[in-house]
Image (cartoon, rainbow, N blue to C red; front, side, top):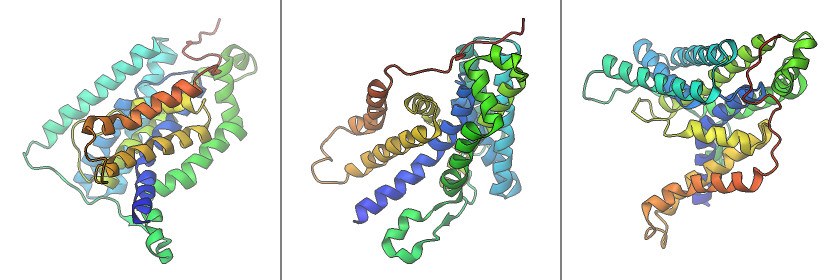
Length: 304
């Protein structure tokens, strides 16, 4: 029972940054723009949040700084792909390389000491500790509660029920028709990319502000690319994307704990480490058939 409770608690914790990234990427892609800058945006958000918190002593101010950096990253991506009409693959990968490079350079410039810099991470919350040992599942960071109880339902409502969400889906499916109906395609895509960038950066800041309290190189470790796969697995729907994030996080948390169980310690470390990514590939292979992409996916729009 202790093993299961610990596994479920770790699953929720590890799913948190993936949920922020997946929801943010869903905003971008539903508007018709593939944002491959997600890895760099999460990386920059992690560093900006940590550096600001280290300077001010406040993780909340660091979180606000990460959000601003994410908005700016989304605006840069929008300028390249919406205003200039540049190739979305090249723009996204270039943005990722630039943001990671800037963050690593700033890290070496600001934190020049050899000792690992640390801040006091955001506290854990245990509102259901009265449940006894099982309450550990609910003893999560505040950003985890925000992700599950606020970000996910609000994002679902915005994209599926609000007029703004209808505009995002319209410009992602048929920007010509949306433009004819009076929707400002460029503005809508800018807003979708900036909102998405803000959520991605918060997902990156979760590592430095909540879990680790420090910044290390390669802190995101490819989770941005996992979020892109989860959006496709979820078929651009919030609920399915979150489910994919939970499945990946469950396997990711499980592979760490399998190493201490009798019989599993003999397995190669690399095999267990690759297990969650193999699950993602398998899930994409099984669910990626006949996927209905947004109609204007990867297509720049110019008013004639």
